[in-house]
Length: 347
Ligand SMILES: C[S@@+](CC[C@H](N)C(=O)[O-])C[C@H]1O[C@@H](n2cnc3c(N)ncnc32)[C@H](O)[C@@H]1O
Image (cartoon, rainbow, N blue to C red; front, side, top):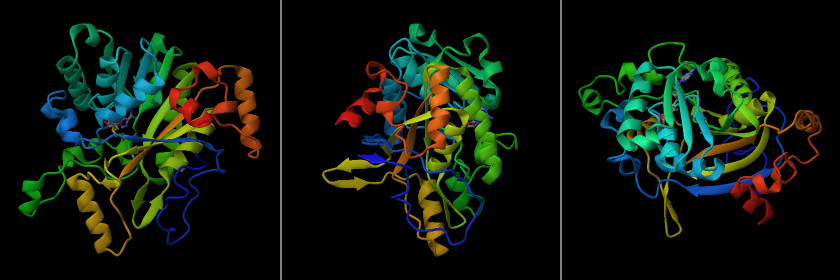
């Protein structure tokens, strides 16, 4: 199955009023895969493997999703970088799979927990190949130093241009705010991209993807996890906007994976919402919006062209949308293409 802009077919309703243009011209068709990532709950996936302090972070990736994308897109021994690493899920799972890994995080608070998680979850031999640096993803080149240009895989989940916060249910039941203020949008500092919205968000994420492009080796991969959001009643096609930003940075769009946040039992999907998601959905419905619980995230896979000529070809392809740029015609030699892309492209 092939799709163009990832969520085009699934967007629940048209927005009530026209807004600013968020995405560019429609992308080429790419292979689609579906990964079940929540057959067991998030709490169960993290139990014993991640320190309890990790629960304070409001936007963690599912360990099963991090493990799967590292296994699919980074061969053993390769260098995996997460430029917005939070409490270090990508790093823990990558190092446990025998990859070298480096995380960058703006907030010293989350970086400290990421370091502690590495020590907690990994053997000393595995932890020796994992590192966390406090820094800004927009300045990745400077933060990585000598490692710039050698990265095999950048794997990340950025903020989603919507509110995220750590629930304080007892305080809420006592009539106070639902969310702890120090965790709202990851930090009280406006510099944290968790606070960026609309065009400002897109401009800052463009800088992040440009920095990712620079630090990857030729032929390296960018995997970014997004989720389409509803804000003030309007759907924000974050997956489509992200494809556009990455292509503008010079990447070729290689594959779209639907990562199920729901559990598959027989022929039924059972949502595994957080209390925050339930609360947000109920509030939206009370306002009359046709909101539904999120049951998947979009995993978007891009390649940095191997050669300067590849970059030039790519620019040509972006100007001529009728020509194909799917996995089978990308700059990936057939033997080096990620396994899922190969299987779906030829299956
Ligand atoms: C969705 S969370 C990532 C969570 C991570 N995947 C995990 O499992 O813990 C996004 C992270 O980006 C961080 N962040 C925001 N702006 C940043 C920037 N400019 N540079 C680096 N990190 C940033 C936030 O503090 C937050 O921890």
